[in-house]
Amino acid sequence: MRAGLCALLLLVVTLVNADEDVYPEVKVADPYIELHTGPGKGYPIVHVVDRGDFVEVIKRKTDWFKVRTAKGKIGWVSRMQMEKTLTPNGEVAEFVDAGLGDFSKRRWEMGLVGGTFNGAPVMTVYGAYALGANLSAEISASQVTGDFSSSDLVNFNLLSQPFSKWRYSPFFTLGLGQITTSPSVTLIQVEDSQDLIAHMGIGIKMYLTRRFIFRAEYKNYVGFTSNDDNKEFEEWKAGFAFFF
Amino acid sequence: MEGRLRVLFLTNILSGMCMLLVSSTAWSVGAETNSDDDESQQQVIQPQIERRTIDVDTIDTEDFEIAIFSGLYSAEDFGTNMVIGARVAYHVTESIFFEAAYAKTDTSETSYETLSGGAPLLSDSDRELTYYNASVGFNLLPGEAFIGKGWAFNTALYVIGGVGNTSFANDDRFTVNFGAGYRFLATDWLAIHLDVRNHIFDTDLFGEKTTNNLEFTGGFSIFF
Image 1 (spheres, rainbow over the protein chains, first blue to last red):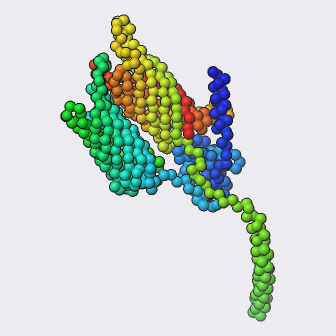
Image 2 (cartoon, rainbow over the protein chains, first blue to last red; image 1 turned 90 degrees about the horizontal axis):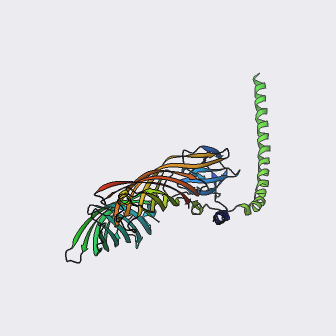
Image 3 (tube, one colour; image 1 turned 180 degrees about the vertical axis):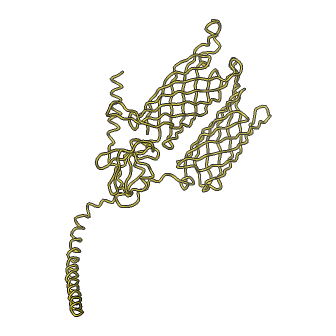
C-alpha cells in the first residue's frame, strides 16, 4: 500500500516535471517591479527587477503571476505591474481578462441560483448554450426543500435576451419541465408524484467582472396535475454564473 | 586697446570656423563609414531578432481547486461518525473563492434507541446522511508558515459560509453552513486543508426543531 502510494506520488511528480517547457518572457518597462513571496498583496517583497530586465512568466493564480528573473529569483507579481511590461518585440504585454465584450459573445454559461419556490427554499444549477446573439437554450435542475414535501425539477427553456450587449441585460424565458414531489414523511412510504410543468419568466443578467455574471429572475409555473386541477407556482431566484 | 581686442575677436572667429569645417567633414566621413557598418551589421544581427509575441493563454492558470476530505460529522441526536466528501473551488481573487461540496456520512442510533432496545427509528438506508452545498469563502488571514530555517509555505485562514441541502431520514432539508478553515500550500498546486463547519437545518423527526451539526475534516487539494 505504502509502496503503491510512493509510486503514485513519484508518477505525479515526474508528470508535473515532464512539461517543463519554455515560458513566455516579458521586459520590465516601469522603473521596477516587485516580487512577492506569495500571490497576495500582503506577502513580503523579496526582490525587485529593474527596468529593461526580462522575466519569465511561469504561472498565474487569480491576479498574480509567478515569474523567474534572469538570475533565477522566483516571486509573484501583481497583474497591475505585469500590464506595464513589454513583449520581446517592444509591444505592451496584454494580460487582459475577459471583459464586457466577451460577455455579449459568450457561447456557454453555467450558474447556481437560489431563492424561493412557493415559499420554500430552492436551489438550481443550470447550463446554457447560446444559439445566437439574442437567443439561448437552457437546461436546469432544481431542488425544492419544503416543510411538508420536497420536489425535484428538471426544466428546458429558451431564453431571449433582446439587448445582449448591455451590462444590465433583461431577458425572458419560456419552457417546459417535470416536477417530482415526494412528501416529507419519515415513517410511512408514500408514492412520489410526477407532473408536467410549463413556465414563463422574466429576469436580468448583470455583468460583474472577468467571466462572472449576476442573475436574478422570476418564474411563473403551471403544473398539469393528473387530477384535472392545475397548480400554479411562483419562483424568485438570484445567483451567480460564469460564461466561457 | 580697442585694436587689440578686435584682432583677438577676429582670430577667435577664424579658429572657430576652421574647427567647424574640420569637424563637419570628419562627421560626414564618419557617417559614411557608419552606414557601411550598419548594412554589414544588420546582416549579422538579423537572425537573432526573433519575432516573439507573448501568448497569455499559454500561461498556466491555477484558479481551480479540487479536494477530497474526510473527518467527523456530528449529526445532532444521531452520534458522531466518519464523513467523506469532495469539494471544487474557484478562486476569483486573492481573497474570495466559490466552493461546491458533496459529502456522505453514516449516523448511529439515538440514545433513546440504544437504551430502550426497541425497534430502530430509521431503516439502514434512511440512516445515511448526504449533503451538498455552495459557499463563498474569504481568505481572512493569508500568511506564511515556517518549518525550520530553510522552508516557508504559503497558508491562509479562511472563513466560509453558504447554502445547500441535507438528505437524511428520507427527507431533504435546506441547510445553511458556515465555518472556518486553514489551507497549507505544500507546493503551488498541492494544499492541505483543515476545516470546521456547522451545518444548520430544521428537522421534524422528533417534533420540529433546528439542529446544529458540527463537522471537523482534513483533506488534500490540487490546484489546476
